[in-house]
Length: 336
Image: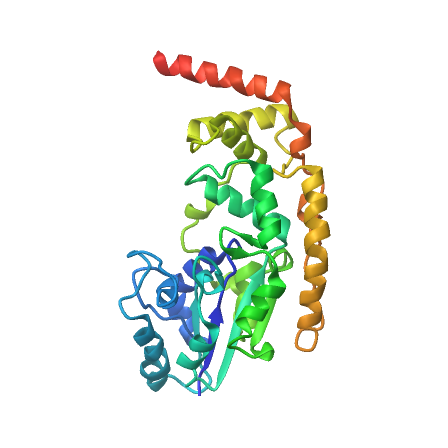
């Protein structure tokens, strides 16, 4: 009987890149025993979660339960016993405003003899910061101190788990712990083959990641603004969404202040300490939870991605004065 792999993200762990790459190379991967099904208009299988989570018309399937049953019955009849069906959506790992009932999901795919759930986990400092920057593309997240305080209080950022011990407990409501495999995102990204190679290896697919064609090199070449630039633009915009010209002006001010090679973080030193105090014990609890099945798994230390970065404490009146001058110049040039 073929195996089923459910890749549940999580968010901000290159899930779109993984989905795009597997979709682009689905014919090649089929020769290596992996079936990456085409179930809707999107390359990810987000619609499979839409029976529990309202995702909007772009991502939803009309009958997600029937699509899951198709995996069980339709695809299985056309596959070898050694094949692997691979489905992927980070929405499986969402908690709020609604979430997937894991016991129901497990029951819907029960025709598979072997099931593996894969989750890549990004250390909380990088994860929260990345979510904040993505949210800033759509709206102003508001006061950064209040934003981080709310995350720490609820163990959620924009409805996504920041307490990964809770996430694994949630998944284990339907799946055995020995069916759940965790990937350290930072470590996987740094190794040869990257996160795509790590996910395929965990899925049991023997293929050289170098053989995979990129989905769209241009698409992945866009560089996000430095986190401090995002923060500064949001701060100036107050309650409004920061326009792109303001984000670019803030980015130039960050470069002039710290140099082009310096990376930044939107957190203050006190917030970094709070994240360490809050999440390091919870990460140890996670490691103990899965010790029997993944004894070598370790989360990246909270402060590791922030080493050598300029913090929010390092910008003040002079920075915002320089940004104001840039804003005035941009406005004057716009008037001609």
